[in-house]
Image (cartoon, rainbow over all chains, first blue to last red; front, top):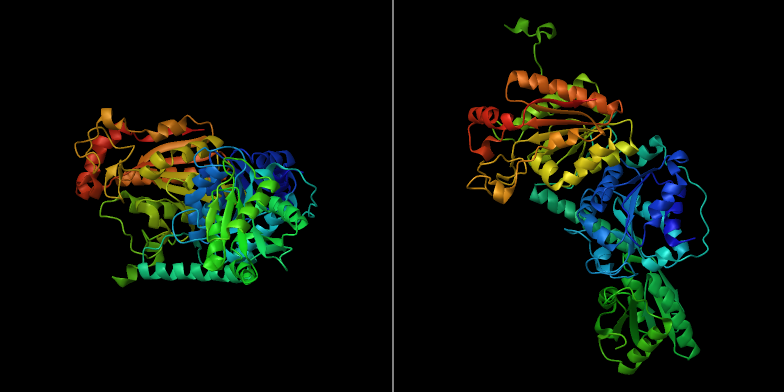
Length: 364
Length: 251
């Protein structure tokens, strides 16, 4: 199945209550698949095409405020439009899922794949001090698995979660094992979890108010500290990453999403040449596996960050390992995808130069 | 004296849906009156426990402090989309969106048009005082020609600022909107009439007839720089001829 189709299947099967979306390439198959599946006739899941990304995310906000498992999906320019309400969701501590099948920018950019939304996804993606929980699938199977995982994390921490995919993962076809159908949560069951904050009508309790507004500076500072404590806990408990052949590695390729798949092939090619190289793949981009990467720094001669961007994740890599070893970036932009051989070439450059941070800008 | 204080002699009481929080509104502002009759309607219909309101960005941003129901605070202009998300996933709730004219008629034009066009079974209360109150009295889409505001100090001019925006007339054209009415709360008679309209709006939306849209032409004595009494008079003489009261649609 296609990655985008799998998002839709996984949403229905994990008991999602509502999807609100707006068409944008390269992820329109998500809503198209949902409309074809007609889950409102089976699980009772609501699927609605909104008039804009702004409306979609605000419909998600409304459904989430009542404790429902609500989601949307879009691609880069659409996610920009959602930024304001992502901030409101974090500020109101509402759980939800946003899928970004990212494409090249800036601006209208291109409809081809890209990973240039790393900053937007991990550094807030809206105004104010907040983070999304960000999961980066690198296979169609993970597109499936992370839908359920993202909802679980979102509800556990009452925070919006994002699946940051890219146009390749969204469009490519792979075999996938679909989970069994989980029923949507019944009202009574849901209320045990969300009853203390969800706006479901105040029957039998004091009223609930979902808001991100607090005009009292002292109280609002306390609230911000509470948010930061939550992010600290997420950093502590929810880091997910994968290591491939890192045990004896002298060099690492650090990459997520589709770049990790290409990096995997590059590792294979370089190992065949006798280069001791491994792949370090962050699965959660927030929280970034900083400690886990830093733990490898002592054995390494260099790290090559491979991204479909001008160099975004590399900043988190540098924060993790500091100036203790050469860290370089290799990336392509504009919807062009690096080949494993290009990555191998970039790794050779890194090995030759062995300097401090520099950028390998690609072929002239 | 004390013996006449008995339930059977009670002519008026504060609605139990109103909280005891002192309202922050300026003297003469229509918001307080609309809040009061909204609370009374919720009490009369006995729907306090199954109503969720959506508050706007604007002067009524703190509305959730005053009515004892569940509330969701929306981003500027987005209340109809938030209401859609709540109502679609919770069809058993009464969902009320409360918005001003900056919120609904400017930044939120897209959301209100499409929510009404889809016929979402929600009630929208639209406060039209022709000005941005909270940010200090700037021009709204609804500001009358010639009206002085912080951003039209010489008065609104058509060649620069375009024309005042008649939202209810546009909403009435949409098939999804089943009840569209324009009310006011500047006289006791108007208050009674507006309360009836609110009740009807909420009942129709809950019955699944489509979107109910209640515009309330309102005063902003601070923004208009008039006393409360003068603001009421100015509204009757200037706003109401352009925004005439009455039902625009009842289908």
